Amino acid sequence: MPFCPQCEEEHRPEFSVCPECRVALVDSLEKESREVEELAVALTVHQEEIAYILRGFLESEGIPCQLENLAFHAEPIPVGGLTKVRLWTKKSDAAKVQELIQAHEQFSSCSSCGHVILAEDTVCDFCGEALDSE
Image 1 (tube, one colour):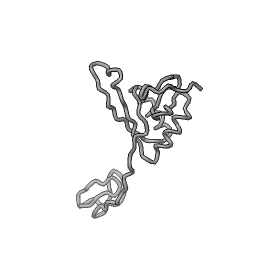
Image 2 (cartoon, helix red, strand yellow):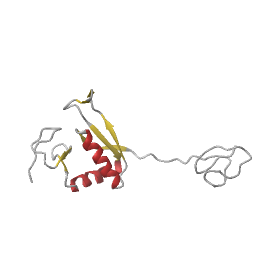
Image 3 (cartoon, helix red, strand yellow):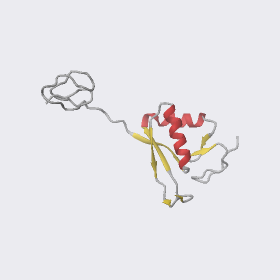
């Protein structure tokens, strides 16, 4: 059976061109050995809504990321202090994430633990460290 090298769909033997992609079909698909880039936790936040804002901000800057919500939800809202959201990105983008967060005027990070906080916060909600008011 022939395969489309672009969409990787299998087609009937009488086809020579993929009807969707309009490319010539091949006899077999050779899987390239694609290296999967290692992921890393770029940041952790305790406010779920802030995590979604940060993800949108980072994706608008061209950094793909994924949220991992570790929140304990007790209907209908998360229990205070038990909300935790990790933002995962490619390991190679993690440093860029920290730079973008530091450059963004609405966010900052704790000098003690690196947790993302709002710029107006006076205490880190992750480690309890008193923050410098610059």
